[in-house]
Amino acid sequence: METKNTCLLIISVLFVIVSIVDATANVPILVKKVKGKKVCDQGWECKGWSEYCCNLTVTDYFDYYQFENLFSKRNSPVAQAAGFWDYKSFITASAIYQPLGFGTTGNKTTQMKEIAAFLSHVGSQTSCGYGVATGGPTAWGLCYNKEMSPSQKYCDDNYKYTYPCAPGADYYGRDLLNHPEYIEQNATLAFQAAIFRWLTPLKKGQPSAHEAMVGTWKPTKNDTLSHRYPGFGTTMNILYGERTCGKGDVDDMNIIITHYLYYLDLMGVGREEAGAHDVLTCAEQKPFNPSTTKKEAASS
Image (cartoon, rainbow, N blue to C red; front, side):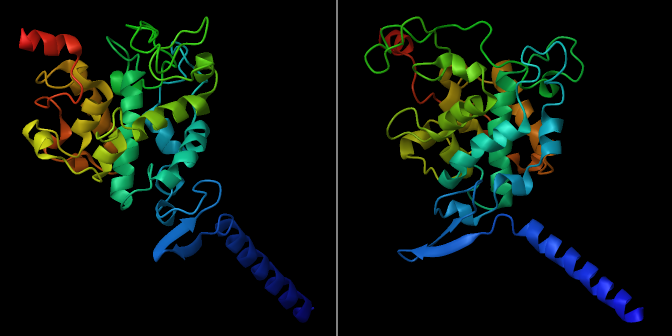
């Protein structure tokens, strides 16, 4: 009987060990060198030999409960997009871009700051938590999945030669060309579109919001004279230009910054990691791409 019990105990211990190993080995990190550079593949989340896949992936430091904390009111009955946005959609979308460095550039703090920065833009631009809403703007991110009062449809003469609009389609921001309606029907596609914008410079020779945030962008002398530095402030300049930046201490800018600081705290990074004031804001920055009207007014 003692021998039988001992065998059962050994089998039980082995089963536990195997279970633990199996759970942690679901996505093995594959490593090799290409032209002397270490590159990795982490399976579905960071697939395709990349130097960035050798770092932590987004799910290593950003979990479901953190997403829920950041967007705690998004499924409230008054939210316009209740039931649309979720953590799985964000991770599925980010997995495509992690091999390109989205959320996988630098050390853990840099990675977490980029995710907080990206989501703070998303949250601030989709918040409906104004007025007397419980928790204020920062608690109501992802309330919308489309612009409710768009200022333009992006189908005017400025766009018809490069990206002509599909017949019968309206565009608000950066959407799919032939079927822009898909963006408001699929949360993964919506997140993909936002991440693509984050990673893509508006013009050649200019940084992407990603490059400005993680510090891979090196400002020129003209950038420095224009008060443009690597950091969160310049991401606002890249994404919104003169609508938000170069106007001093305006509400539009401060609301976005407030989201970023709040998200840093909720993610456990701490707002003290946000950087100095001139790095955090774009109050004194000259826009990368001022409007033609503004140029003409200055020269007249």
